[in-house]
Length: 176
Image 1 (cartoon, rainbow, N blue to C red):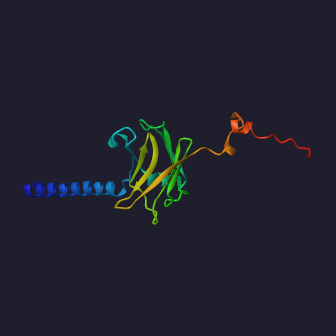
Image 2: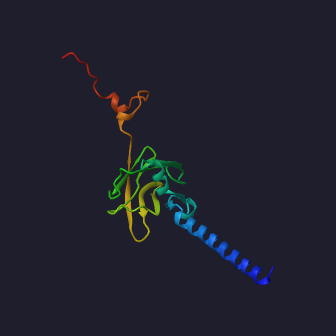
C-alpha cells in the first residue's frame, strides 16, 4: 500500500472517532436529567455534607405527574428523620408548607411562572425545620415557612387509644 493512502485512512479514522465521541458527549449532556440538589443549613452539620441530588423532572415524567416521596432523611441534630413528599397540587406561590407527622409536603414548582427548582435548602432553627428555600437557574427564588401540624383525628385508626380530650367529652345518651 501507498504511504499516502495509509495516512489518509488514519486521518479519516481519527475524524470519525472524534465525531462519534463528540456526538456521544453532546447527547449525554443534552439528555442528562437535571438534578435538583437538596440540602440543609444550620441543622448541626456543614452545608456540603448534608446534600443529595434528585432527578425531579425525570421522576415526574415517570410517575405521570403524580406525587412521590423520598426518605426518611436524617437531619443531624434535628428533631429526627423526615420524609419529603413532592405534591403537584401544592401552590408554589403560597407562603407556607406543612410538616405533618414527619412528612414535609413540597411543591413541584415555584413562583408565578411555575419554575422548576435547581436547589432546595431546608433551613433549621433550634434543631427544627423553620423554612424551605427554592432556587432556580438565575436569581429567581422563593422561601416558604414551615408549619407543623398533626394528622387529622378523622384519619386515626380504630386501634388508636382515645386521647385525653376525648375522655372529657360527654357521651351521647340518645332517647330524647
